[in-house]
Length: 409
Image 1 (spheres, one colour):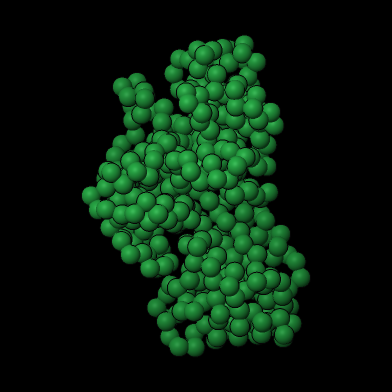
Image 2 (spheres, helix red, strand yellow):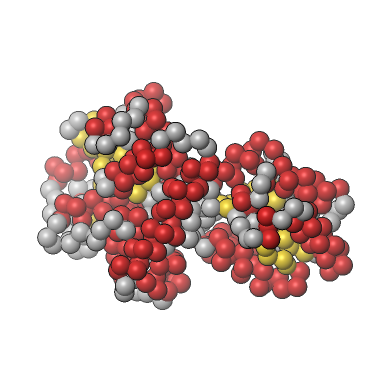
């Protein structure tokens, strides 16, 4: 998964605005991403910006279920665009429109035939639903933008937080913007996460996506994956911890669905041979720490340094994944590299240390970069502990700086 667009709210907003300034009718803009990251907010911001030329509707509304609603919405928007010399139709939660891809294609073809100066933007929480429908019936008619989980720097900018506070909040409670006002009320905040994010994503988005034969098993895969952040776990071990039995192929498929829903990713071992990637156990990565914090409080840095280190390591991998980098790990017993990144950040091999470390703890990082010299080694450590890594000739950076600025800055 790579992208040349900053997958932040501001980056996606600016890119979308640039596309909407092009001559209409253009390609449909499909905005996807996980729940509660600002897709509706972005559409409403566009509606406010374009004023009378814009119309915002939601396919999740009661009136959207009335026969002929969709056709009337598009026809009215087209007529207004002709009169105003341009217009914008902004449709939220498009997957709730029955047979949405075929109907969207039909109305878009009519807009193009009529040379209507109307731009169309649609959004939806389930990237897979949008992806399947759009690929099958709308080839050549759309462009997709994905808004991912917010990075710490976006929290700092939007909520006027010091960068260090934003980073620790990113690790301890995640980065869902809608939950910021509830952070001082832990029980209410966790209820918000469960009721507005986790349950709809698993109980509605994924289950409506395809026939999930064992929904209870899907929930167990999710719960166990969230409980093992930044751990390399074999599917056999996962299966052994589950109350409900399931084939390894089914468990692997459910992990893939959870990644498509931007909840948990089972990241693969780095290898130049694809068969070795598939054979290796996945490294479980929770893509927003709010999902972990919803199950219980974050670990104490002093009392539980091992678990704290896992959370920081997971935060590094999740940050890179959400920024559009291709993320792997590497292991050749007894050597290991926490994260291997490829993408518009460059090629990096990353080791994360949240406690004291020695030169010999960097052997895996150095050996990997010897075998694969295109990668730059990068050590992430506590602030003030950079000297030892630098003495070993390795670019060294605090993990707080990495989670704020990205690698090597």
